[in-house]
Image (cartoon, rainbow over all chains, first blue to last red; front, side, top):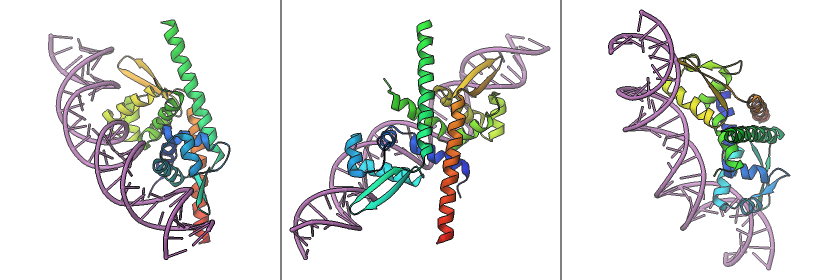
Length: 104
Length: 104
DNA sequence: CTAGTACATGATTGTATAATCATATAGTAT
DNA sequence: ATACTATATGATTATACAATCATGTACTAG
């Protein structure tokens, strides 16, 4: 059985990939069906489907069926907070390296 | 050249692994040298060293040399906020599944 | 029942990751 | 210079991931 650490790693892993991050950004303002998602992020339907499935297994996305379409949405608002914090970290870090370069 | 999305994925990836999460938890209350870290998390020195190096490249850890020892520390307080948010998400999700199971 | 649309999945391929063992490097002490 | 301690790195192996193409399944409309 998985322990808490592994579940946490799974959630983080579900966010730790460029294609999946693009999906998260696209889902920022609400649920979308697969047919809207894959053209928006410029990936194949098949690849997009796999990433969506993976993120919902990790507990990051919710899935809702409506007729033929399947709508995915960000399951927890904390996901967006995580992304925002990571953005802060990256920007600080890039800025830090920039000033170092300038100083050199 | 890497773009912002890739940098964000790198930071998240640096946190998205059980061994590295153990390291983060151990570093919660301050910097530690490698010789303290690897016995604490129960991993080989060599493996621990690689993970530490990886996390510092991603901008997650800072590195300080003092004589023979090298001290690593969590570089941004936001890292701990990210971990805490992920913990909230996981606990809500596990709780959600539990109540579903009970209901079934 | 047929055809079409939306999504998922099997099989494959190339690449990345994690762990291990052995060895190398850098600093310290004698 | 020698021996020791702390950390890093090369080589290897096994496993996991991401992407792609082709195909399968589920629903809808006519």
